Image (cartoon, one colour):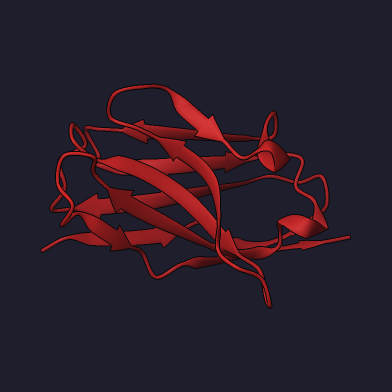
Length: 118
């Protein structure tokens, strides 16, 4: 059974930092692409950062230079280090797994709330 469990969200003042974690089970990091998405109230879910099985990380323009995605294959965990947080980063952050090699791999975590105060 595949599970994605996010943690690390919380409340922080603008300029602060948070590190999100996505602990996975039932997935092989060698074939999956792991992404962090976010959804603010009244807005559509958007891609924040992506780390693929075959290449380096990719970031949305609005987080470049501030956020870093990484993975620990030994722990089957993906991280999102968020620095210099802004109020507009406030959203529910979701972890997502998909694969270019297997269309059946398409899983979401339950989400973790990040709130940045001004």
